[in-house]
Length: 341
Image (tube, rainbow, N blue to C red; front, side, top):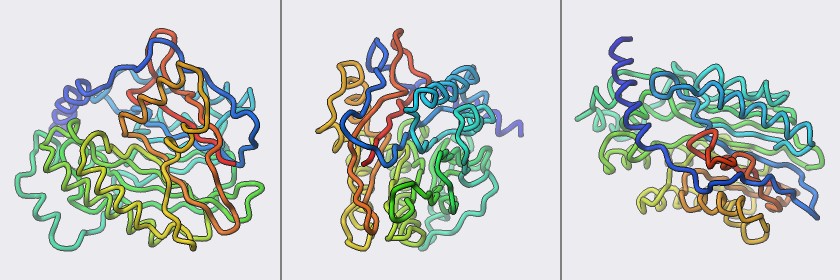
């Protein structure tokens, strides 16, 4: 345990240095989706619910996230579904309860069994594995994945990434995939909502080449998971901290898998919701700045595809977790909500 805490302390210095600055010095307005009727709305948000000593003084911000969702509920404008990443701590896992969500599902636990990737990839990654970078100590925390829902969750499917498919400090978490099947009023078929958190690049503490090798394995596993577990009759919304950033190799790898997914029976490709909705949704200046920053940063994504008899179109965008009046955020990410009609 002492060795793991030393590794965590080293991770804190790297992750703390990697935290982004807020995009704007004023609060992002919570904008209304006027003139459309949303069948469902989905928020994706990396809440930075990291344990001590990787992050300190997170309790107040995590409580504020849950309280803000509760306030939105009081206004009747809460997201129907919330996909969280880095919900590692008890305070982060309490966000759903504070926000009033009736259904809550967790991703893979710290001791969830990992599969093996073909071709001896784990053995190759073991060569040069760094204790100081957290690659040899095993999992200290779970996947940090969580889905909250106002609508009934009828099925929960999850899987940890394969053994060895991680690099650097990311190996301290048992990252993976969480997918829930949700019955949405007014739709012919249920909706599958998937969230994941892919390997970081610079914050992992290892070379870009090593982190990219792990990233590619995770993305390929994500594709196999969707093909094996998603019902193509269901609409699919795939969210998460996908850590694409400005790295061409990551974008190429992710979008090659996304383009090849048989997400529905018509074989229509998954579409990225944020750039789609920004073309038709007019935000105020402050919310627009936060949305532009999120899009440019290219970490947080929401993809979608239609289901059998249900054609979903992104119809609204809100930034409920952008910058406040002091230019501060509740996490090192911003949380955005896509409304679908």
